[in-house]
Amino acid sequence: MKSSAEILPLLLNPECPKSRRQLIEISYKIALSYITFNHRRVKKILISEEISPKEFALEAIAPLFESDDKNRFIIINKTFQQWNPPVTTESEAQFFLNKLVQMKTEQHISKLLRQADPFFSRLLDKLNYHIKKNGYKKLRYLGTVYIVPSESNEIKGRIIREDEFYQIPGLLFNFNNKILQKIFAYIEKETEFADAIPLNLLILRIKDAEVSSFETDNNTSDFIEESNVEKVLENALRITLSKLNESYFKKGKLSSEEIMLFEKTLNDIIIDMKDGGVNPGLYKYLMANDNRITIELYEQKYRNILEYIYKLLKKNIAALLRV
Image (cartoon, rainbow, N blue to C red; front, side, top):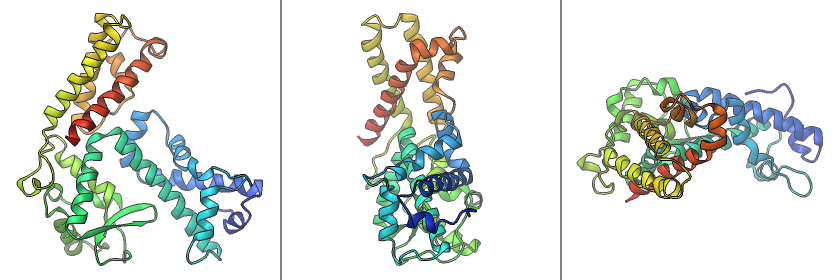
């Protein structure tokens, strides 16, 4: 996005307090714009983390504004100095800052998607292997990672947007050894877009198509263990409930009634995971199973326990998926 302030002078004066403030303000607007554009991908993160797009934008760009002993932004200043070719014009400065902020925001989105959704993480690992094995590679462009043919060193042509990517027929997203080949063929024959598949959007489309069963076909069995999500979730839930009982019931921290409440809550969370992700805030799950629980009671007594148990559940799922 364009800014009313000139960016080049701000980058050339990294120690000036006014320049620093303006860089933060402009970077925040760039990040917020990027998050808004990618609303479909970040929606579940915003809901599950209970943060607004503005808070998310600030979290994403915060690492860019760590300062050195001379009060300069370490990452921005270092990247600016190493940029090749050097930034000499205002348009180049705008491109530089947009690309840097978008890249950092995309990294934050990917990180939270991996943490919040074990299935997303699993699909990413599968795709990374598939990309290497079948002669493709990844290129980063304007903060987004794209899958491209191995001979490509740059993306030429108009890049497919999120809404346009969701117009590609869903049948093409059933995971097998020819998935990338089929999607590239479709883009080439049926659209006017460049040969570039957005990696994270691809994962979300595959997830939409296959997460309910998470079954691989015979073509992928040489490198991916067949994993029945139903069984994985059952085992992860069993392990987590055992820990809940051991740590909180046997030690007198929760009553048998409260343990049953947490069991119902975790079962509801598991159901949402099967459908593609945990949507509402955790407290809503708990309160849905006992309308006597107020926000105040949740904060005082149950929040830390539920957040710990939920993290443990995700950890157990991830560990079982790696087996």
